[in-house]
Length: 270
Ligand code: NAD
Image (cartoon, rainbow, N blue to C red; front, side):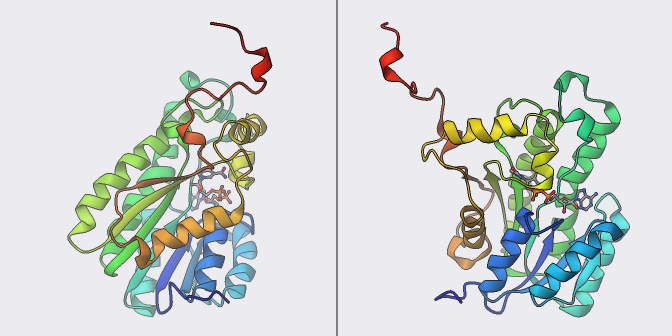
């Protein structure tokens, strides 16, 4: 039990748990430890078998189907939350999808259909969720999504997901502006690479993990608590003056332009 309960009395929806490695689950665990009451969604029946036991471990009986490609299912989730809770304090959106076959090779080969579905699921779903959450949200509510630095710079194999994340990051800013009047904050965490199901779908995943560790200010792998604690900050009142932010939790990888030479003895004289 933490010394402080930063989310005591708060109610939050967690979207994107596939298993115990999922970023959504990492955030759910810390939110629960800090006193939040949680509801969960799952993408499909196959995943419901994994999500239910985790949700129960987090003390939740509100576990709802939601394929975000289906607007009706998103609407049904918020109708259910309206009936069950009446209001809401935070939403964690940790959902993304692109055709695995196009998370390798070249971006230039991306198909129209994959670009469309990647944008719908990985970007538009957050806007759709935010609009519905806003109708139930209390003053000071926090909406949080997850992005990756492949939105801003070229990362091998990330391809169409980089384009979808760039759109997601822009939408965070527009949503923050639109919902600010209602006291609702909207932020994203740009996480360094984590070993999850989605991470494993990226063709050059192993290269990306090694590169991120070897080219970061802190020079280590990112761990679960790094992402959990930053999420807790953005969900809680500690960040009450923060909105529209893309917050990097990446050991300082994103600040690197050119890494210092690993072996300065081999540096060439200018
Ligand atoms: P994950 O595979 O555990 O989670 C992805 C989730 O998206 C799954 O629960 C899946 O069911 C859900 N999803 C996909 N399509 C969906 C749909 N149509 N409807 C509803 N849900 C759907 O992987 P993760 O790494 O925890 O990913 C969570 C988020 O974090 C994603 O947005 C991902 O891009 C982002 N992220 C991940 C990393 C990383 O290295 N793993 C780094 C930065 C950002």
